[in-house]
Amino acid sequence: MDPHVSTIFNIQQWTRAAWNEQDRDHDAPTQPINVFLLVQALAIVALNGAIVLSAYRCRARIMTNAANRLAASLCGGYLGYGLCMTGIRLALLVDLRWPEPLCRLYESINLFFICYTVMIVSSMALERYQSIIKLNAMSVRQADQLTVGAMLLSVGDVLLHAIGHRSVISRSGLFCYPSSMATGIGYLDLILVTSQIVSVGGIYVAIVIRLRRTTRKLIKSTSQSAGSSSQPPISPTATASRAAMTGERLEIQTSSLLRAISMTIDSPHSSSILATAADPPSTSSTTTTATPKRPALTRAVTNEAIQLQSFKNTEVERRIVTRGILSLVALTFTVAPANFIIGSTLATGERTGRASDAWFAVSKFVSELADPIILLSMDARFRAAVRETCLWWLPGTQSHTTMSMASSRSATAL
Image (cartoon, one colour):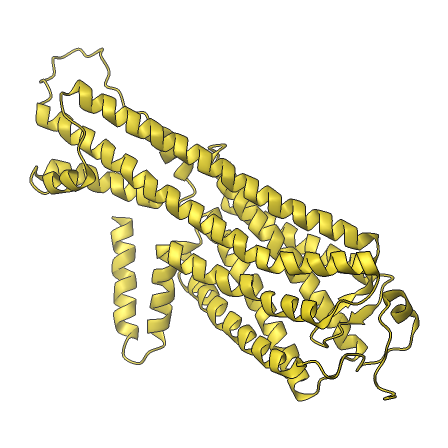
């Protein structure tokens, strides 16, 4: 029998035996999977590094609300995790051994960033719930406090698993995990992580219900306004074509409303806009001087602008729901195999099989790769900032990018 290969599968026996840095199934395809994981880690560094660098360069325009702060904090955590995994995967590619200090370091990094990711995703859902449901936008300071709190809780989770417990090498040799997974701490992890995922899903369901109610109120208010002014309901296409012909007043009103609605996707004050959108402003009846009667065309313009607003809210709803669902699904790709390994370890008291190890190792990076793509596809300001940052590194584009940033700031100031 090879003295470097152990046949110990029970975790309790493992903790009492001498450390064997090659205790794995040597016939497992460990190195090909390790190369694949290294490529994933490099992609994580590239995607999240671009977002973090862009957020820092354009912090005066982007890092101004709680939602963007939390999104940048999440990508910052992914960047740190990708850098750590790149170094460890390179070391394993050179020599596939698991010394005990390296095993401790690997499991501590994974525990920290998994806990940090779950907490930040939960904080993002809480921020949306507070803004849309409670109509009380979260401040930037509160978002920073939630980020610091997520870090402290993650450190506490690492210490909880490290003190009094030993590292365990997976049978595939792809990763390590603490022996505490086979104790009551494993049950605690299983309950807490599952409850967090369910809570985030419940928050997004509540947001969907609220936005649908708001949209219905807007459509109903628009229909009533159109009926009172003897104007039939106007489709978005007809509204857009008439807006081009009714002159400067309609153009100003509709552009202002569309600009306000587009800000609801990123702005921390989206709640106040959604709350007041359903109730058009009423005119005061106590005036000392006679005012000229408003022409029918002006009333039609107002009705059309309100109807444009209601149709635009449908797009806002779709984007918020899509981003939330995609982020939750991406996080589930990490949580589901991790919960399976914890549950299997608790049920059998032994190390999991090679197939389960490969499933967890490959799907672990889905959230880190998917979330920056979701952010760039759903947030125009982050997308523009990343584009400016990428153009900045190309020769001959620095002056053009600087001029475009200056013009954008001037337009914002005006």
